[in-house]
Length: 222
Image 1 (cartoon, rainbow, N blue to C red):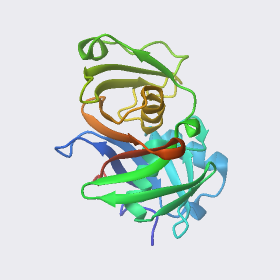
Image 2: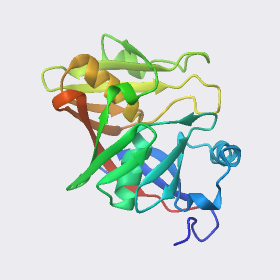
Image 3: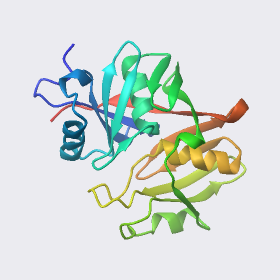
């Protein structure tokens, strides 16, 4: 199976799409990681693609994944793992943090993860969704997850994410790792609308496990 599309580019998925199938966070996928084994070459490819993350599948049967932003390598990230689980149709994925269980439930793909797997993020609460909507992109330096309740009783959250790395991704459209951290902090299931209209679902489980889910679709290659 070729890791690339007809034009030689890695596959591109949209992860955490809205209910209408729009939006979501773009994910580059190199299905055959062996075609690009060098970490420096992987980092350069992720930089050139410019997606929030690019994932290299090192073993499609075991679901061994290697994840990169345009500037750093990550041991775990939410939207690449959800996207890979959907694409590879596996029950278990192999990451540096350990085994990650996955399942399909109708239009949603779910993974089981832990908040401690997420890289550090600053969670900053605002008084209203309108305040979150009005935020400008902050200066480079701090990875910030801005959020507010849209409907606290229903667990509905409005959020935006600003990586602050200065690598071309000024705003992250849908951020699974930050959703894990917010779910752990609040201790409840959440329905998060992030960015332009992406949807992230979470549900705390036993022993610190949190289910993270969303819709995934394949994008046409340019």
